[in-house]
Image (cartoon, rainbow, N blue to C red):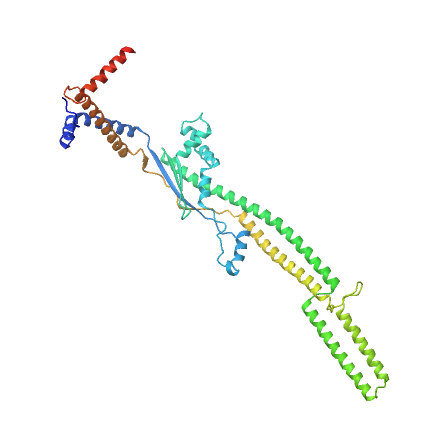
Amino acid sequence: MSDNRPHEVNLLDLIAFVLRWRVFLITVVLSVSVVVGVVSFLLAPKYRSTAVVQGAETQSQGIGSLVASKLSTMGALAGFSPMMGEVPGELFVQLLKSRWMTERFIERFDLRRVYHMEGDPIEDVIKAALANTRYELDPQSQSVLIYAEDRDPKRCYEMAQFLVEELDRRNSDLKSEQVRREREFIEKRLAESQERLAALEDSMAQFQTRSGILNPEEQVKATIQAAAALEAEKLAVRTQLELNRLIHGGRESDADAYLRSQVTSIDSTLQSLIRPKAVGEPVDFLPRLQDTPDQAMQFLRLKRDIEIQQMLVAFLVEQHERARIEERRNTPTLLRLDPPALATKRVWPRRGLMVTVAAFGALVLAVLIALTLEFIRAVGDPAHPQHERAEQIRRSGKSHRKFV
């Protein structure tokens, strides 16, 4: 009866296995290592040039930023001061990865010829070009790390330099286009504001001509003082009239008639200061007290609108001049934190790593082959527990071949 207990493998068995197959294992590992090493030396080396850039945008105070600065002076909004004009690093990465930039990159270095893709679609060439470039963004500093790889170290350096310069130029063009559109908008808004201000000034002039209101506060004060003086004078005349009646025993004298006419005249003057002005009456410097609230309100509203328009026109004039300066600005928009340098050390192939990985893989494969051969030889022994099953499989295979 055969022993069906599992065969235990110990350290001595492993040592014996390695010693039996040592020549095979060493031969396979050395052969694969030598082949991979030779291939790694035959492969064309690849070099890498890097550059680090960051946006150099000035904080030009556009409409949004100036509004924010005005809001920052108001109480609870004092902490509201957003950074305006800053270009995030994400925009740089998108520009570098754009089809427009990649096609210029391919055309500049004739990459169809370099990559031997003269007859391939442009999409495949773009994919190959992007495979040899990489862009990484530092979210904290918003700086962009640019990688360019090529078999020629000089061309690799020129590629990185081209990407930096082209990114700067493209960003400058976009910035100029944005400023131009802002200037055109400001010009249109400035013309509208100046037209509105002229209309309000004309309305104010017509209102002052029609109402005589030049300074409501001082004119109303003068009207009240005149009315008070007339009331005092009226009270004095009435007192004199009562005194004359007492002196003459109730008889009316010529002086009393004069005093009554004086009271009537004062009442008429007071009414002219109080009652609303009738249509067609000449303009008075002293406003009518009953007309004063409406006239003062109209004057203050017109004055308020004129002051607002004057502030807006002054603001837009300043912004228009600023936009004209920004549009003509020809300064770099990138800070070259780490400019490209000529690569002197290859980044691929990494020969040591390739040989190490190949040797380890060859060792694993050789061990598997040796274990397989060891097992096949072992089951050929009639004393092996799996011998009968192996014979059955072998006979089944033979019968299958005969049937076929």
